Image 1 (tube, rainbow, N blue to C red):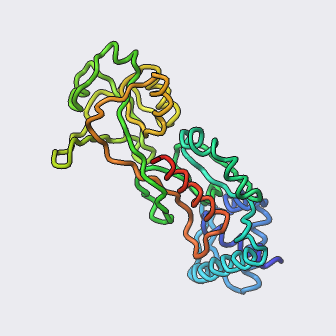
Image 2: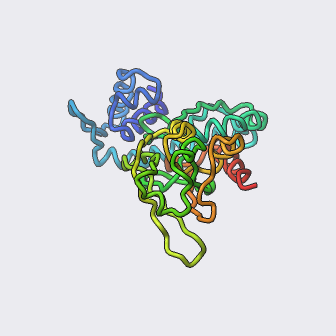
Image 3: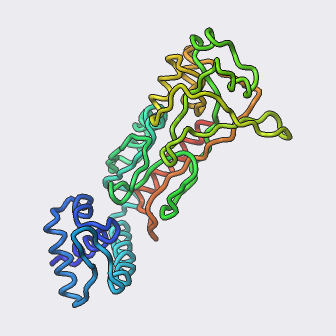
Length: 303
């Protein structure tokens, strides 16, 4: 029995609550994972897990052992990183998931710079706007906007997105230009809503003029709601209604007159962006340099 593999298999079963999910994330067979845990229990002469046909629960002894195993695995990873000088030249596979517009507009065009700096890092890039289970899907880091609801994760703020209100010229030719946020409550206007993954409801929008005026929450009829940023933008350009976008998404459509900025005397709260990852006493060098690099991309948006 390889004790390292056995401890890693046991830890992943505890984290995923399933031998099948643990096997998938470790790229092993379920039989191999099961045998490793059984051999570990035999060596320790302690029952670590309670198994039923439906779920796996950690025993009291298993929970105590898990805490020590996690620390030990982290120390081993840190030792290997130091010996291989990965802190100087980070290397290895890094699995990240980012929103679709962020990937296509900001991240992907800048990747040549990232690979020039860190040629030994292999990025496995997932592109989605949905919620990600980092353990089940074996993802190292996600980049998301809004507030972090999963308190089990560590979130590092990476910047704030400026938002604005926009519509296509073809749409405004039919409806006229709104002059006040309350105008969007008129039945002649339709809104395009971004459906927030956490609630399944459109992202709430409010606007403010000056420092001392009350905040006005935009009310109106939703003609369409979507849960993908690229589809959200495409619907606005197609003239489906009024929408609010991070300004980095609107820059190119506004430049080619596919979208028109509205209510420019009003401002919207910024949207915080963060990189989230599993808690660990040691953040790997490859994850650390990737997040630092993304922070730099976000800073460049403000210039």
